[in-house]
Structures are given as structure tokens and as C-alpha cells.
Amino acid sequence: MGTIGLSFGSATSGDGFDVASTVSQIIAIQQAVETPWKNQLTQLQAQDTALSSIGTDLASLSTSLQSLTDFNGIFAQKDGASSDTSIVALSSATASAVASSHEIVVNSLAQTSSVYSSAVASGDTISGSISIQVGSGTAQTITVDDSTNTLQSLAAAINAEGIGVTASIISDSNGQRLSLVSGTSGAAGELTVSNSLSDTTTGSDITTQVGHDGKDASLTVDGIAIQSSSNTISTAIPGVTFQILNTSSNAVQVQITNDTSSVASALSSFVTAYNQVVSDIKTQEGKDSSGNAEPLYGDPTLALIQQQLGGSLISGGNSGTISSLSQLGIDVNQDGTLTFTQSTALSALNSSFSDAVGYFQNSGSYGSNLTQTLNGLSSTRTTGAVYLALQQNSSQESTLNKNISDTEARIATQKTQLTTELNEANQILQSIPSQLDEVDKMYAAVTGYNTK
Image (cartoon, rainbow, N blue to C red; front, side, top):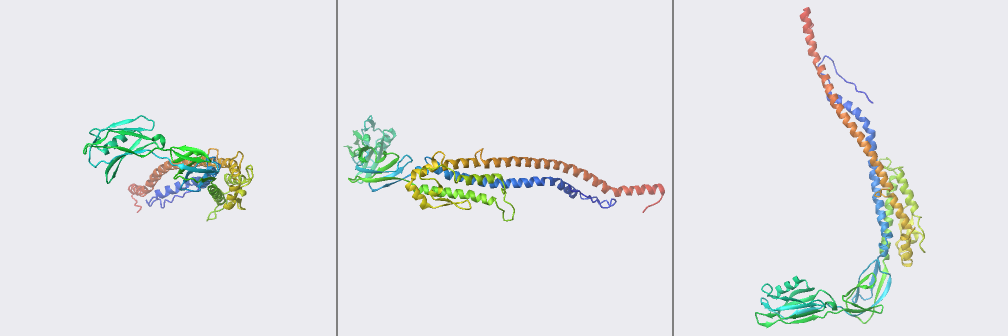
């Protein structure tokens, strides 16, 4: 610990000394004990930043890998193509779809039943009732009253009943017509309408007629006859939804294929994420722009990440013809990074797709082993190496912060006491000249000798 030399000047000058400056010097020496704690705290916080960054990039690598190891992930996606999209248009192919070829012939399209009324002049009032039946359901009768004595109010009343039809008003040059459209497509939604409506303004009857009959679609899929109440078909080919748009006597070819381009894109994303982690590690193995070692230089957690990731590149069982990443277009460079060749990946996926799936998803596969490795390094799992390192740092930081806080509290108390004591001492020093003057006066009074 350093020493403080108090400079009082001349004891008889009455000038005293600078209390504030003296206290500051004493406190600064006492605070010096905190310096190594603060330096260590800064170092730990820098490590936290580096560890958190690596943890984030490890999480990104895990996410990119999960898209390949998830049974319902990128490998399960399918592409579809129709030889005539004006006849058959593919809507979707889910994970349950199987790569295959199908032949579809559309004989007739499904129709939704509709009925419309004769024209009524705008502003005319109506009377009577209308009975509507949807398919084999119970007929519902709506009777016109003072609140429903126009076509518009009648349409609103029908819609309010919720009987499975949509009522609307269609206007043309002849006037307004009540339009009824079944809420159920195909034959099951056939409308049966009877009415006793009349135009009370003109005294004429309001008739209804069929716009479209309710009909099911008729088609064959791979020679099997299928009826459908809708033109959107989702049950004919497992996992595939398609729409029939027109009829044709010629067969339309529908091809369901594995989505190899998306898998190749996922492999590329995996390589990018892996290389980011490698870059993080290499940065921490060097020095910063000032020549100082990076926060994690020589850190055992960094060495563990590097060792386990490097080992994971060669771990994992064979899957048929696929036994290494290089067969999927992923090669290891001398610096530990990866490169990706899309053409190699697509060639392997087109020739050995199921083997590629197994390489990432089978028990004991490369994908399974790397997933376990990344879980063991995670910053979010309580058993992850990065998580544990951050927790250890956090514990040390808490101790250091408490030491600093306790020391600051003690020094604050000492500062108050010291300031009081030195102020009292300073007052004594400043009073010495007047006390000496009193002594001189007393001496002169006693001896008759004046010292001045």
C-alpha cells in the first residue's frame, strides 16, 4: 500500500491544509485493492460476449442441421408437376406424399347447385313465402313480413337463418333477381326450392329456376374411377392435393418428385452455419488489433468445441451408398472449414435419395451423432459446455461485484470519518496563530516584556 505525506506548511501560518485533496489521495490508495477485481471482471465479461456469440452460432448450426434430421423436414418435401396445368393443377404435396407418377383423366367437373328468381323492379315490394331444401336435409320456409317485403330484405333473412345457402341480389337491365347458391358443392348440395312469392307492386308471380344442378366431379386416377363433390381433390393420391379445371379425354400425367433442390439449399445453409462457428473459434485463437490475446485464448471450453466439432465430421454410420459428407458435396478444407459443391449434392440426391435421408436421420447416423454433439456444446441446454462456462463466469462475476460493492461501502464510511477528523485537525492548525498571539499577550502582561 502507498503512503500519504500530509503537507501542513508552516504550523504558525494559520493556512492549514487541503482536506479534500488529502482525503482523495487516501481513498484512492484504498480503492487500489479493487483494481485487480475490476480487471478480472472486465476479462470475464469479454469472455461472456465471445461465448454468447459462439453459442448463438452453434444454435444456428443446430437449426440448419435440424432441417435435415427432422423426419418432417426438408427431406420430406415434395415437388409436383402436371403435364397439362389447364386440366390438372397441383396445389400441394405434403410429407406423406411418395415420389411417383400418376395418370388422371377428367370426365366431368363438380358443380354447385344454384337457383335464381325472375326479375323484380327495384323498389317493388313482395309477399308470400319461399321453401329451401339443401340435399336431403329438412326444408326451411321463410315467410315474407313487413320487415322482409323486398328482395334485399328477404335475402338478408335467408342468410340469417343459416340453412346452408348464400342469398344475394343480382341486378341487370331487367331488374333485380334473388340468387341462391348452395353451401355444399356437388350432388349432395342440390337445392330444392318452392315458393309462393309475388310482386305486390305489379301483382305478378315471382318464379324461380335452376341456374346449375349440383353435380359431382367424375375422374379416373391410375384407372380407378373417382367421384368428388369438389373440384379440389385431396384423397385420391396420398399427401397430394390437386384441382381439376377442365375435362379432357386425354390422360394428364402428374409427377411427384423429391424436392432435391431444397435439400441442396439446406446442405449449403448447413455448411455456411458450420463455417461461422469455425470462424468464431479461429478469431478467439488469435490476438486483437492491439496485439492483446482474444478473451477465450487458451480457454478449455474453446478447445472442447473445436475438438468435438472436428471429430463430428468423421462420425456417423453408413447409409447404403452414402458413407461420407463428401458424397453429398461437402468437403473439409485444411483450415477446418467446409466447401459445398451443389452439382455433386444433386447427383447424389437424384441417385440415392433414401440413402441420403438415412445418413442424416437413421439411428447412429451422421446427423444423429452431430445433433448429440451440438446438444453437448449448447449455450441453452443446462448440460451444454457453453452454458456451463457462462454459468461459471456468472458465479465469479457475482463474487467480484460483491467484493467491489462491499469495499466501496466500507470506503464510503471511512471517507466520511476521515473527512470529519481531518477537518477538525485543520481547524486546530488554523487556530494556532491566534493562540500564539494570546500567549504573547499573557507573557507581556506578566513580564512587561513585549516580544514584538
